[in-house]
Image (cartoon, rainbow over all chains, first blue to last red; front, top):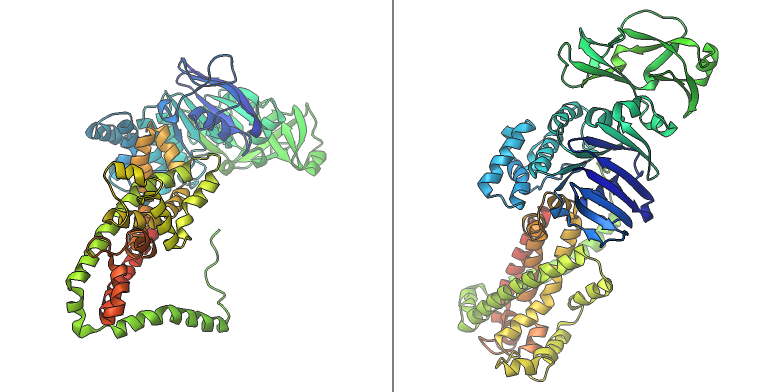
Length: 351
Length: 263
């Protein structure tokens, strides 16, 4: 009982193979044009691959170019819902009827589907907007309604296409939290170019470059220890996991990382992750002291050029410094240093 | 990106030909209003022949608009949402009545549905004679008006795009459900303005009607035909009836604009 995807689309140069176990979320992470949307279109039945086999819970949805007979199940018959970048709520229907659309299309009565719709609107926190038209709500509220609509259709597989990309940054943390909650037990294929989305929403991540998967595995592992330079480029986020205590993430090793919570503040003792980009890290040879800074004692393992900068890598973290700074500090693999990050540059998420 | 607000303006001399053009369109309308015999206006309008012609016009135009919707909506959908070989050629041919002289259309219809026409004998066997009947009026009007609806609706369908339809399909809606609950409501303004245009074109139809349906009072003599005939015997009556059609045309433009602005 799983989602199996193996398809090639020649004219777009995309050839991907992956599986998603039931109840798991896989993120396809890659830049625009890498082939992520092609995968979604094939999974949704909107695009016929040149060769491929797409199977959901043992039922072949798309089969082409194999020995057996070709199969192309129509989009409406796949039980695969699509949540796009834009909410795409039907403008002529109220939010309630938008969400009720899926159940109604699958044969439920008007009253029954509205009951389901109300429950889902409540689940995403906009029950009071049920009678509004899409034009009368904000972008974030519309995207919440779109999430409710996709889930109300009771899909066996949910496709998310950059669900946060078109939203105001002010509302993304809250929506991300909602998605985390409602996606918890669902089989989800998430397409994104944002490593943070992958980190917070996906159990596993597959990194796509030029239509091929170049890195794949558990999310935290892939993002923290990128095996390809490409992954490091696009993922390249520093992540320190621990528990939330007194305004900081406390790691098992006893380190204390101060940061600002993005979205709801975690409760004391909750697991949390501190996230910061390599460019936010300054490198010193001695502990510079002073608050509100986090100084982490590290041992450098690699130095590699990256986009005009030098990426300084340790077992778990990385920092970007200018070539001049790297030369002045005389950094080399094996040398000890301090990674210093301002608390304001560190975003903390409950996990 | 939105264009910056403010305008650069147009050269001053451009207003002269623009005003001349506007006057060219508006003056004849004013002439009709000025020449309307207001003292006899009501009498002329309610004369049996006028009433009969007006009612026949409304009835046939209503019917042909309905036919345009019944056939035009599927045609627009096929043109906008599918691709097949020869589609471009087919589209051009379907739109041909837009540019064809109506009298030619009338002749074409005559050789299709007329007694000696392509399908005429078939109809004859069935005991139906199409030419020179009210049915012929409706056919002539539908023939010339259909492209208006198809063009207008195909444009609306292309503007609306397929993104909502894709979402509806992934939510489990069958093609018919998508058409009924998503596509049609989304293009309704375009459909309404297309239907209004088709109605207006039907109402004004002259050439194809007189060629294919003739001019029998109460049967095929629609308002434009009545106006043309009256002009020789009672010019004032022709002017009065013309004014009626002018008013209808102005109403139609109002409707069509409303439909478009709500898109």
